[in-house]
Length: 171
Image 1 (cartoon, helix red, strand yellow):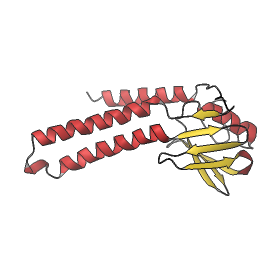
Image 2 (cartoon, one colour):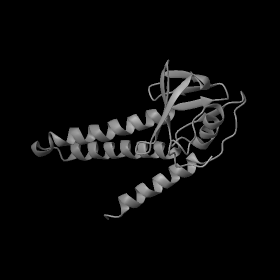
Image 3 (tube, helix red, strand yellow):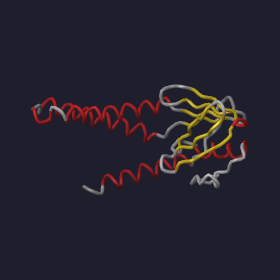
Image 4 (spheres, one colour):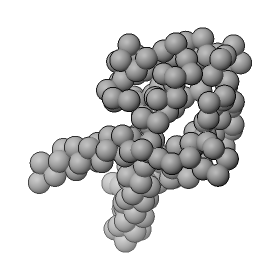
């Protein structure tokens, strides 16, 4: 039983890296559109399902001992599940040779032109690629399907290279 969670985590990360390395076609406007991979959807559904299972068990077996911990555990699973699902459905990165448009998990859009990028940083632990410009910063998630297409455009439209930023994908 103790090996199931590490194996499941490894499989999810392997799937996420596989999806990040996928080549994606341009849309009808000549742009690429990145979305989070499907594992985010399924993890969010599992978290919500676990929260509903815990809520059902808490209602059936309610007593004074679980009066504090049960609502906290239920809230954690439901909150995490809903946040992941909202991120899965709202987050997107649309880009072409001129600009990048990122819609974050709450639906806020931010646009940056490739020529306005002043700095790029990659955090291998979080999987965030942060692009900085005078107008602000945008974040591109490594686990977006087609992430390598973004890296190709980044290398061709800016002075930054994936290898220099220590991004673990080949373009």
